[in-house]
Length: 336
Image (spheres, helix red, strand yellow):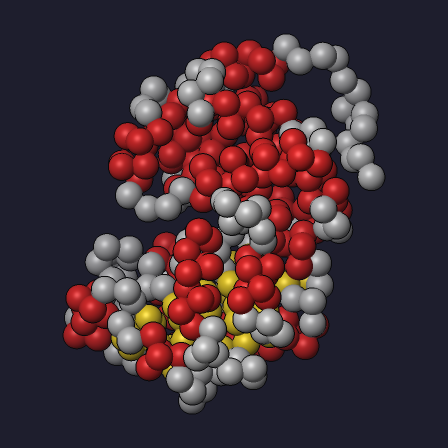
C-alpha cells in the first residue's frame, strides 16, 4: 500500500484519512499532541473532533512529524490556514521533490494576504502543489455521505493524481486548473457564511439570507477575477457550491460564529464558544484590506469587517447595506 501523510488530526484530516483508508492507501495522521495520537492508535477514536466516529484499525497516528512524512507519496496539509507557514517551515527540509502537497485549508494568510499556494512555493520552492476544495463537511464525509470536490493545480497531472487518490463511490473529484480561483473562492466564501450566520442570529428570514448569498457571490467573484481568477470557477463547486453548504449548515463554524455575533455575543465570547478556528473572521480582515488596496468594491465584506471591529452593530450594518445608492444588478460587476 502507498503511504499518505496527513498533517493535522482535526475533523477534516481524520475524515480524509478515512477516505484514503477505504481506497486502499495507508494513511498516517500527524497530531501535535501525543495523547491524541495515542487515542487514535489505541482506541481508534478522535473524540474531540469526530466524537461519533469509529476509525479503522489501519488508520495510524504519530506525533513525530518526520516519521509521518517519511516514505509518504503525498502530504496533506490539514491545519488551519494561519498555521500553514509555520508548518511548512518545520517540514521544508524533510519534504522530497517527488511528494505531492495537498492543501485543504480554505483561507489566506492574515498578515500578508498570501494564498496558501504562494506560502508553500515561497518556503518549499518547486513543490508539487494541489488544492482540494468544495462543499464538504468532515462530519458527513466520515459517514460516507456522497460529496463532490475539486482538485486544483497549475499542473493537470498533479490534480489528476490527487483525483485518483481520493475518488470513490462516495467522493467524486473534479479537476480544475484555476488554482487562484479555487483558493480565493474557498477563502472568501467563509466571509459570506459568517454574514449569513449574523442574519440568522438577528432572526431575519430566508429572503435576507438569499440576498446575502447572491450579492456575496457577486462580490467574491469580483474580488477573484480582479486577482486573476476565472469567473466560471465561482459558479462551480469551490464557489457557489461551497457557499451554499457553508451558509446553510450548522456544521459550518463560520455560520455558527455569525449566529452568536448576531445574538449579541462579543467576538471573544464567540471564539471561546466555537473552540475551533473560524476562518471567516480571519479572512474578513485580510480580504477587506486587499480589496481596499486594489479599489475592489466589496460592501458586504466591508460591513462585516466593521461589525467584527466593533465599529457598527449588526443591525446597523444591515441598514447600511440596504440603503446604499441605487444600482442596476449587473452594473460594474467587474473592474478589469
